[in-house]
Amino acid sequence: MKTIINTQNAPAPIGPYNQAVAAGNFIFLSGQIALNPANGQLITDDIKIETRQVMENIKAILAEAGIDFSNIVKTSIFLTDMQNFAQVNEVYGTYFKDDFPARETVQVAGLPKGVNVEITVTAFK
Image (cartoon, rainbow, N blue to C red; front, side, top):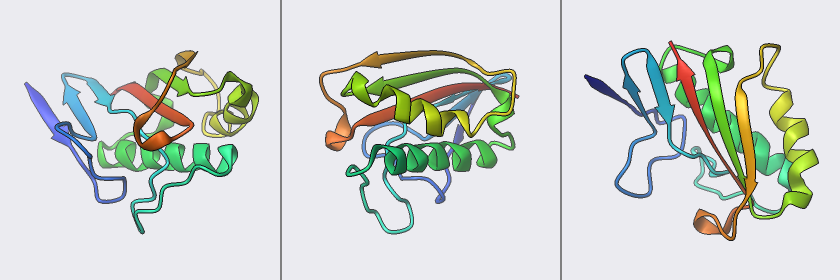
């Protein structure tokens, strides 16, 4: 059985998908970009601010599911420019205390809405 998870505290889906789906004890979050849910503003001019908004969107979805960053077991980071890796990693790292999740970071040719970073996570409840 699966349960759909959506919150107004994160950007609404812009296509045929949900913010997250719980299946058993796993929660699969859709990729998040730096879209501010409060005002609909897309942030792309500063990679650190952009990454922070992505992580805040993830945080809101996790909270709706009743969990937090300590429940994440796997993340995938997609960058349009690997030169941004260090700055993205710096911000990303502030959201975890220890027992970091498994992760890959890859450079891609393009991301939705022309953003620089997209992050998706899988968590365990």
